[in-house]
Image (cartoon, rainbow, N blue to C red; front, side):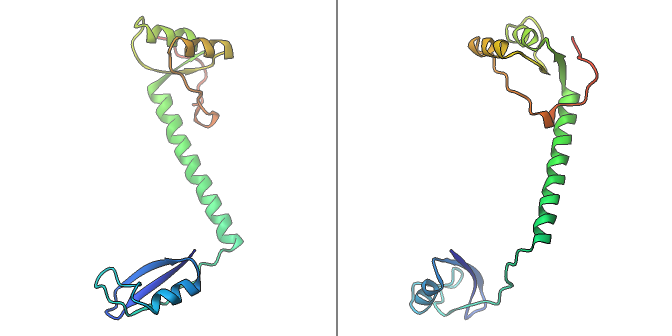
Length: 144
């Protein structure tokens, strides 16, 4: 696909996507191509800056994306640390107690064995693994 910036005889600018250069030429030579603003069929390509990709730009974008993801992960870690309790290896026990109304509802995180994870699932208790990037730096579990 090729994207062209287009302009009509009344200086309305818009973009068009074409399968090939010849596809644009064919449509521009007919009345099939028209301005979405005024319906004029006198359309030309507008001046465009080429989209040149350089290694430096790509590296800068990658670095910027990594910084943005790191910032988002830090916010998520802070949110979890502020609003959830680290119950450590008592996760399955605490999840059951919350599920069955024995303890108040709250956000928890911790560790669980594969066997306990399967058992929780069979009991209809929803639990999802917390990606390492989102685990807060907590020294010891908080139990209520």
